[in-house]
Length: 168
Image (cartoon, rainbow, N blue to C red; front, top):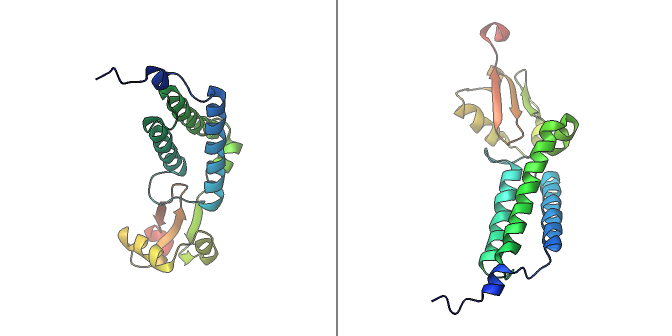
């Protein structure tokens, strides 16, 4: 059973470890920047970096499992590099508020004082139907009931209704 296993291919790296580290770093940062520029908002409650990490880890782990890298340390180092950058960017955003603005978008008003802000909806490609669906899901019938509705960094829309005395 174990006599046919090529133990040197299994445990000895076939690619220089520094190259794997650089590849993981460059790919993570490049994909993060590209996705941050192209997909400024994410859908659902899963963040951009979460999706990116899952996709990259799946691919890196698949390569190690499918023998594309020839050794487990190659795949493990690549996965560790991806996890490191995910943690490092979260830490940088937390530790340095000026960097957080670059790493995570600020909330964007879609409704303000009962009025739809169409230029912000166009910017995030939110249709009237999508916005109205969100409003109805939250129990409102009309935008005039809403003081603020913001698209948050995670793609969710938060709604602040008018208080009874605010709305008349």
